[in-house]
Structure formats: C-alpha cells, structure tokens
Length: 341
Length: 94
Image 1 (cartoon, chains in turn orange, cyan):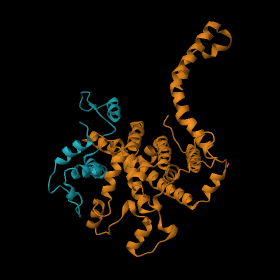
Image 2 (tube, rainbow over the protein chains, first blue to last red; image 1 turned 45 degrees about the horizontal axis):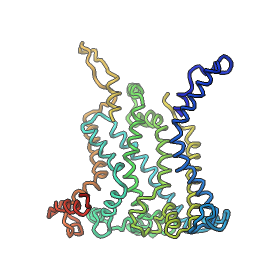
Image 3 (cartoon, rainbow over the protein chains, first blue to last red; image 1 turned 45 degrees about the vertical axis):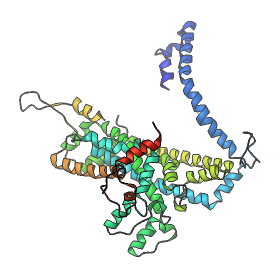
Image 4 (cartoon, helix red, strand yellow; image 1 turned 135 degrees about the horizontal axis):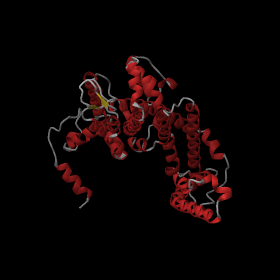
C-alpha cells in the first residue's frame, strides 16, 4: 500500500487536463516500478496462501483419500463432507473444546497482558530484566516448552503435584485428565457435577494455561506500546481533579487502550482457534477426548486416516468460523473503540 | 522498550522554587510504597513465568535416577554436569 502511495506524485488534481503525455508516461513508469517491487510478495502470497486455500475448498468437495491426479482426487460428493461433518459427534465435541479453549485463553490472556503492562510501565529498578523475563516464553521453541511443561505436569513425578500435595490437595493427572474441572472441584467439596456442568476437561485447561504462558509476553509488549501512546498530561489533569488510581485506569487508560485491546482480542481469538502445537505435544499423540480440539481432529482425519477431502472440509469450516468471528468482533467493538486523536 | 524513557525525557518540568531550572522526569514516577508492591507483584508473576526455565536448568544437573524421584528434589542432591557433555556428544554436533 505504501509503495503504491509513494509512486503517486503530489500534483494529483492536475492530472486530467493540464498534464502532458510525457508526464503521464513518467507517472505510469513509476507505478510500474511500484508494482514490480510488490511482485515478489504478491507471487509468494498467491502461491502459498491463496492457491492452497482455493485448492482446499476444491478438495473439500470430493471424497478424496489417496490420489495421484491433483484435479481428480476421488468421487465428487459436493457438500457431502460438510453434511457428514455436522452430523459427527466427534466433530461437534472438538468444536466445543475449541470454544472452551478460546473462552479461557482469550480473556485470561488479555487480562494478564493489561495487568503486566500496567506493572511494567513504570520507572522502577530492573525494568529491563522484568520485561526480558516476561517475554522469554514467546521466544522459546514450543516443542521445548511443551516437553518441560509435560514434565512439570507429569502425574507421578511432576512438580505440579508436589505443590498440590504441599498445599494439602489431591494429586491430579493434568494433561491426561479427561474429567471436567468443575466436576473435579465438585468432588473436592462433595458436590457431584456431570454432563454440561462438568466443564472443560482438566487436560484442556492445563494446555490453555501453558498456551497463555507462551503468548503473554507478546501481548504484554503490545499492551505496553498501547500504554505509552497515552499522553501523560491526561493523567496529570485527572490527578489535579482528584481522580483515584482506579478512576485513572477506568476513565483514561482503558478507553484509550481500546484500539490495542481490539487488536489483541482479534489476534488472540484467531490464535486460539488455530492452536495446534501445544495440544499435539503435551498429549504425546494420544489425545484425551476432552482436549481434542478442531485442529487435532483435522490432523487425525487428514494425516492419520488420510480422509483428505473430509479434512479439507474441516479446515474450510474452521476458516469460515474464524472469519465470521473476526467480522463480528470488528462490528461489536467499532462503536466502543476510542482513538486518542 | 525505551519508549517510556524517551517520553518521560521529552516532557521536562522546571521546578521554579529552587531558582535554577532543574529538569525532572514526570509521568512514570511511582511513590516508594507502591514501588515495593509493584516489585513484589512483578517478582511473583516473574517467578511463575520463569519457573519452567528454572526447573529445566535444575533438572539438567540431576542424574537420571534423581529426575524420577517422587517427590522431586528441588536442588540436585547429586550434581551431574556430565549431562551436558553427554548431550553434546549424543547430538553429534562435532
């Protein structure tokens, strides 16, 4: 976009009548140069983003298993894969799991990001060390992080259970626990909870916590950048008027942070729906049903059972859900977003 | 990272009382008592965030049998830095 703008000279209004043909040719040459600079990025985008997307859409219309001819992947079934998908309890269960996962990681991630950014946005000793520590998980390989977390949450020798024991609580199976967290909590206090009331499985919640741990550094940096754009005089004026710290946060920080929060909300939602690596690695290939999210289900169907057409349909449906959710978030938050200037 | 610093530096306030124009940073200053609270909170969350790294470092010095002990030892009872030599050798980087 910026390249295109740079290629247009400033005297645009004069273009229509007074411009000589030599000038116009020069303009066109400049535009061509601009597009030439864009070309490598466009080619990559087309080859590795758009074409696979449309091919997946094509593939999802066939009962494609193992095939040779790219354009003849198997018998044409039309919307058959989609119909089968919506009638499969395993899929709807995985969708519920994904929704739980998003429902945990997005609010928790945003809350912690704002909290950490507030804490770090001060002139205090060791600020750089704190910021580096908080950002550390994000630059770690997820595979390495998952191995360490799996060790920490290991049911027999993990340190997480030692902490629980030290607190006088029963040991848990963490990432291997298919039972719901409300159910487990209910057991502790003697209230039986089943079905819907059981809540998301402890395995899912464990992985959600690891996922929040991983991305909180990135979110905090974004929130910090948002905080530094808020003019300091607003706070001074409010303080002179006798505003409390809560009022400063509620009436200045939060409203002026909404563009940043909107960005984080959308990015985190998309990330949570696409999340795959921690699920794949923490459950070591044998997923607990209560933590089998859509991406894991897609992987199993596509690359273990080789139901490629069916897997492509799952992918397209996931794409559609993310797309609609993002649009809805833009809609819902548009009126509430306050820009500083 | 230095954004906050830069902004605080851009808005100097001259204290008139002392007679000499003295530049003082504004905006991000915090009173002493809430500074301590802030450090406590930052250290607490920082420990939780850094815990996997700490645990990995501690485990890397334990002999294999000790990593399987239940309850786990915090500091290695028996330090075994040979783990690193072994990992290097097995990775066949050289």
